[in-house]
Every structure is written in structure tokens, then in C-alpha cells.
Length: 281
Length: 257
View (tube, one colour):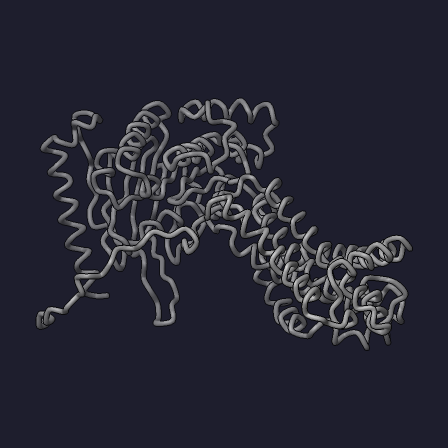
């Protein structure tokens, strides 16, 4: 027998957990507070920006005032250049991302479903994922020239491997019992793949696409910084060369707004298509 | 003999060598019986059920249903799992129909068949609900209806009421008795709950642990199947005997482990 441990002293003045609103762990906060904080998140940096440019006597070539950026936006919009740039960038992201996802989703599902295919492809994909896509630019220019192809291919490389591996991971979370239950109902492997695994991973796929779309946006800008006749990245690079700082800001903000828009769109798709999921991501 | 298990062994290869989970299991079950297999955790009872389901193959020995050896999973055996296995994106109705859909039954016929069994499990009014809107007991009833809709020869139940609260569990017990009396189907249930086994089954196999072997086979004769019967002295005798047996073989297992 072990000896009984000697009594330890637990301080008796230890308080019970004090109530809080702001610091609630993991729980939701009241709606008005939520809205107030969301507005602050955007309004406070804007205010600071305005204050700094208004009272800080900063060279507008270094940091333009908010109103100067709005004027630059109006100017670029008026000439139609901004719209042309936005369409060019959107088109590249759209095509590159669509092709990458079109291939990555089935490949990812197969990798997640079959250990054999996973063993065959995962080492290669795992390696490719760690090669930064922009490092492929010299090769892409060498192979594909300086037209649209290398830009789309860059996005494809940057999205495909990540998306395939992320889709693969979502398949791993399909409950094994759900698959076995389907076998017990007389389902074939094909039926399990198409009627059980596929519907189960749709929320995960949408989520993976949402995250990887951000990568596609980064890469389109990178590709346009190097060689392009139009595009938002090209706009920033040209503006930089002529020290039109206000136009750099316009480019950055437009890119950010587009990114946020697509993020929200995917979140919305996720909500409406997956009402059955007990928790919304 | 409807379900025959002959000299069944199951071993798993582990890093520390062979692990014998089931050893020399012999069982013979007639059509229309309600069999319960009780055992402590580690007795391999769920592993045994997986061999009958065909989700796993025995290392040695055979499982036969109506003379046919079990080669893999199939719709002639209905199965209700311990955890909820409803398809979360389908309504209750679609869940109940899914097995029939996999068999290629026409839409009209499968709707009728599924609706009938949803009525049997008293869930008709929830036909259009999603699984996440149901309580635990209701989910297991949908799983039962889904299995029954295929009119299997035997219903395999893997601790189906293990995660339910005591009151839901009792009403599920009444439901199972009622279902068994109405369908005359063969039920084969795994459970660690000795009282549940005595109350429901007409015959019980008690498994000892590591390796899982049949320690006792017990025929249950109770005057009726009401909840009052749990206060009957014979009910207590059965329970004490089984509890002693499991305690004894559970302790042996703990000393080995």
C-alpha cells in the first residue's frame, strides 16, 4: 500500500469566475456590440489615416489623403482604365482558379477515398506545395511566353496542389460508420463514393476553395507585376514607376474589396447549400 | 439453424504481437430469436458483430446465414450502429428510402415502403425533418426503419441504445419488444447493459474478456415483458448471475492487462 499523501493547502479565498461581456471565451457577444466592433474595425484605420494626412504634413507622394485616393479612383474609373484592369485580372483569376479546382476536386476526393491513390500522389503533391508558385515564373515565361497562358498557369500551379490536398483532408472526416452503414444497405463502392462521400464533403470543398481563392488573387497580381498590358497588378506597378501613390492605393483597395466580396460569396454559398450541417463554419 | 457461427477466431496484428480478440466462438441461432450478447469492454462483442455483418473477416471459422457463408456486407442483414449513422443532408423520409434506392426500387414503391416503416417506428410526422432536428432516440428509430425497409432476414444491433438517457432507453425497449412480437424477425443485439439484455432477449450469450470467449449461454424465461418484471425475483437472479460472471472475467482481464 502507498502512503496517504500529506494534506495540501488550497487557498480558500479563490474567487468564483467573474462575469464579463467583452472577454467571453469562445461564446457569442451581443449583436449591438458585434456591429459596433465591426464598424470600428474599418472606421478606425480610416480615421487614423485621415488624421495623419490632415495634421501630419506628410508628402502626398508618400502617403496621399483619403480624398485624393477617392479622386484618383474617379479619374481611373472615368477613363475606363480601372474597369479594363479589373476585368483582365478577374478573368485570369477566374480561368486559372476554375481549371485548377475542376481538376483538384476530383483528384482530392480520389486521394481521400483510396489509400492507393493517396500513396501514389501525396508525396509529389506535398513536395510541389512547398515550391512557391512565383518561383515558377521564369520557367513559365520560357515555356509559355508572356501572354495570358503563363499567368493562368501560375494561378493553376499555386491553387491546384493546395486545393487537392485540402479536399483530400475533408474526405478523411467522413465518418467510417456512415460508409459501413451504406455497405449494409447494399451500396456498392461507387454508390458510396458518389452518394455518400461526395455530398458529405461539399461543405469542406467550398471552404477549401474559399481559402485558395485568396492565393489565386495574390498570384494574379504577382504575374501582372512582371509582364502585362493591363490588370490591377499592372496598374500598381505603373503607378509606382510614376510615383502616383494615390493610384497604388486605388489598386490595393480594389483588390481587397474584390477578395472580400468573393470570400463572402463563398460563405453565403456554404450557408445555403449546407443547411443540413449541424454547425455552420 | 438460421445463424451459425463455427469455431470463430479473430486476431489482430499489433506492434506488440498478435492480439487474440475472439477465440473459438460457437453459436447457433434459430429464426425469430432475440439474442443478446453481453460482455465488458474488451470482450470483443462488437468485433463479433462485425464478422456477422461481413464488415470484417474472421481469422478462422465461418459465419453462415440460412446455410450461406457470409462473405461481405449486404442488405440481407440489417444493421443499427452504436453511433448515429443517418445521412445528415437527407430528410428522415429520404434516409428511410436510401437502402431501397440503392437496390434500384422505383421511387413510388420505395416511398410507400419507407412510409410504412416510418409509421412502424412512429415517426411519420417527422418524415420531412432533417436528422439534426431529431433527438437521439428518434435518430435510432429512423436507423431501424431504414434497416427494416429492406426486409432483412436478421437485424444486427450494436449497442444501439448506449448513448440514450434512461427514460428514452426504456421507451426504446418497449418499442423493441413490440417490434419483435409484430415482425417475428431475428434480432441479434450487442450490449454491455445486463438488465437491457435480460429484459429484451430470449437467450443471452455472456462473453469473457481477452480473449473474448463464450462463458455462458442463458435462456431467459420471464412471466411477461412489462417494466414491473424488473422487480421479479427471477429477473434479479439472472442479473446477479450475469453480473458475477462479468465481474469475475473482467477482473481476470484487468490482471492480464
